[in-house]
Structures are given as C-alpha cells and as structure tokens.
Amino acid sequence: QVQLVESGGGLVQAGGSLRLSCAASGRTFSSFAMGWFRQAPGKEREFVATIRWSGGSTYYADSVKGQFTISRDSAKNTVYLQMNSLKPEDTAVYYCAATRLRLGVPMTQYEYDYWGQGTQVTVSS
Image (cartoon, rainbow, N blue to C red; front, top):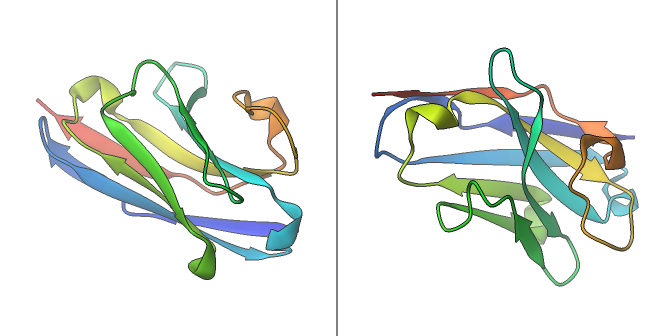
C-alpha cells in the first residue's frame, strides 16, 4: 500500500500562485509515476499532470500547460504542483495519485492505484 497526503491548498486571488505538495509513504517503491487530478463541483475528475519517479519525465493537460509545473523530490518521496496565474476556473479539489504502471503516460484516473484525500483550491475573482 502507498499512502498519499496532499497539502498546500487554500484560497487565493486570481493571478496568484499556490504550491501543492503530496507526500508518499508506505510501499513507495511500487509506484512508478505520480499524477495530479482535479474535480470541480458538478464536474468529472480531470487529469492535470503526471511525472515519473525515474527520469522525471512530465506530461500536462492542455488546459494547464505553461501555467502549472509538476516536480518531484525523490529523497523526500514528495511530488509538487506549482500553480501560477491562477484563474477562478482552476477552483477544484486537487487530488494526488500514484500508479504502478511502468510505461506510458497515465492520464486517466483508472490508471492510478492509490489516491490522496484531496486538497481544496479556491480562486476568487
């Protein structure tokens, strides 16, 4: 099992920045990539970004490309999501997830095996 704990959410004005953290514990060697998803009220959970522990390759949803940056600190088993130029439409619960997939670019929630509890991000206009 892998346990994931997100932090860093909160209320921010439009144009501001937040950095989310996701600390992984447990059988972390069993996960090969991490991802961030978000879910706004009344909407489906959507992919935001993913990163591989080995090599650090990343992939982003078109909606956040150039605005968000995913990174990892392998020594701390922690993944980050730096969010800049935030807009009201970025308001959502943000979830961290881990996958055991060794290859490919996991972009659907069904490809992830472990999930955090989520952290609320609210962007006011």
